[in-house]
Image (cartoon, rainbow, N blue to C red; front, top):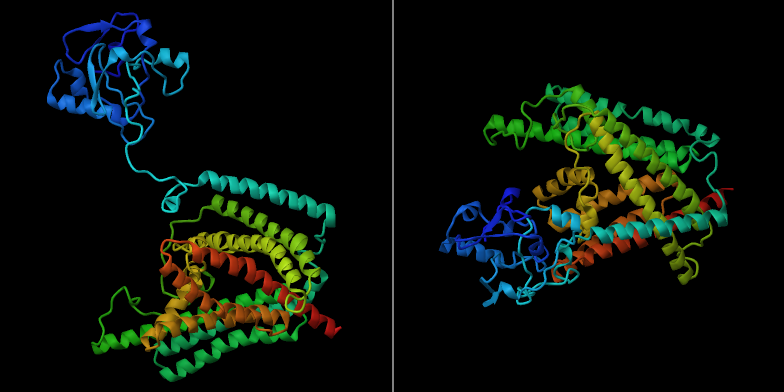
Length: 548
């Protein structure tokens, strides 16, 4: 039976007939017939071609097209009955059945009477009992092979709801037990006024990029020899990191102020190394090109090699650690977008402050030294501290890598905004370190890892060297502001090397598994960071107690 979607082809009062497949007669569609019809599901597989609807006779091609309507198109609950006149025989699942045997039909859409009566495309469909309900091999959605191919948006929403409910209860319980612990001087106190030497030190850091620029200008003009250029740059970069260290150690400043200054100093050092190393490599390539030993290309150098104070100034404030004379740029600044990101930055920064003051500080103050007290008590303190510490760490990542770096990139029209990848899906510790901090990763690859390989250093040793550099700077950013060198941060970073080997082995042994991802989350976020926090806190308190 041919079907047309136009309303004039289906008459409810018998005025218009429905043409049968044989094309020899028409029969009126009455109200009684409508009670035995089944609404057609609007699927592409159940649409009859127009040429079949307009033809008055069936061909073999038409039979093939209509028989395709009988088969399930991939969904077990779809309507698969053939459209036919009363008395016609239909082949379904290899057997013939008569339409006269259909005594009841169902509305597969579950629509009401108004919808059924108002749809002009209602036709005689039957979901026959003889139609096979099972047609192919299928897996359960939560089976081990199919679990990562399914969408788990509903479960994700459930986790969010549970997290909100559980943490709301914890907040209420904490407020009832401890009261409001955030002091009025949380953001600014009289002690911060004593940190002005650190502020002055931070304001004088641009002197070192200017000195490096002067040296590069002299090198470009060939006023000084290459060994002298290297020696001057070594003095400049070393002084740029030692100068803030000496200022912090000589001043009794707040820990947060010292950490901020050391972060700025480390960023300046990394940028200076990239600036010097890149210009050195461009000079070397230029000399090789002049001798005919190398062919210049846009893939390995910027042509022409020029030294510009404007490009250096842009590089020093841009959200990148790798120097180049030009960067991909965007068309303009989206002011409304920047405002929304700033609001988010303020909200999440306040949330971090609330968690630190209301949760982390009481837990840390009421704990014992994890290496000197009872083992079970230490484990309980670490696990209790792990949840708020994880929240603060995730908020820090979101505030800095997503909000602040994107705001800075938008204001500077900086185009490459791949500041991180999906590190939360990392299956090994090595993948995590390659994806979570892309500016540092690109710097390490460009200025540490590949230079080591070019000089014949084995790959494993090059990786250890990269972790060693990272461990030194982690220790500087924590130990110097705390005025103590216990090497807890250094040891924690260097312990990542055996974790890289372990998780790589597990990934090779259990392919397509997330064992390494679970190990990373447990050791790095649940165990490692809370343990380091307790160690540094108690050592800091012991140092202050001895000083008093």
